[in-house]
Image 1 (cartoon, rainbow, N blue to C red):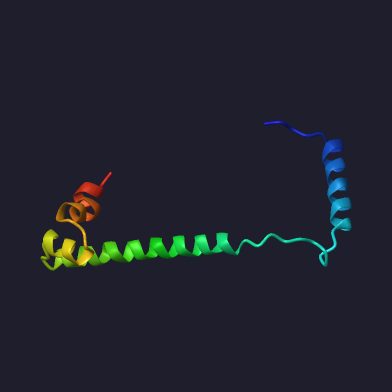
Image 2 (cartoon, rainbow, N blue to C red):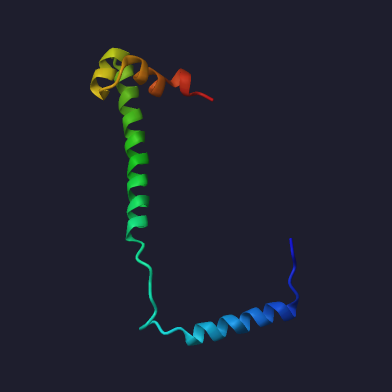
Length: 92
């Protein structure tokens, strides 16, 4: 890792102070990141939904539901349901 001298650090701090002093919040252009925020929100919701779905499948299996019944509820094939949700196959 490259180390900086005290003089280099002081010079960088002075440059930063100068830039900060010249920044006018009234005229600063701020990038709209609403689309990226929405991506993050949906990704988090997807993770939460996936956890709830896994739990629901686990409960259905604990109640004796077959992979065929679970597959019908998911709208996928029995093999797809079992491959995705079978704990035995998901263990690393």
